[in-house]
Length: 100
Image (cartoon, rainbow, N blue to C red):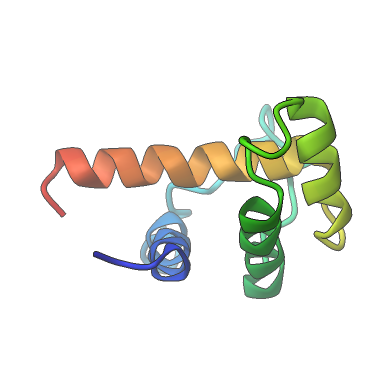
């Protein structure tokens, strides 16, 4: 099995898609908003570290947990961190369904 880091790296590559195609992570003008800036590898790493440090088991209050995680991700807020997590989780689920 892949590590969490490998999965996120793979997601980043997949989300970008082929050059000029916009990729799965592209947003149209209706979707452009707080999360309009792309995630850097460094920010993804900080998100991963926060998820590992502040687990749902040790921080059952989701609001508190995601606030702590976001505090550790430079340039991103709580909403953006939650959204990024959901995007990665969904991409991994879809990949499993396709047998990859």
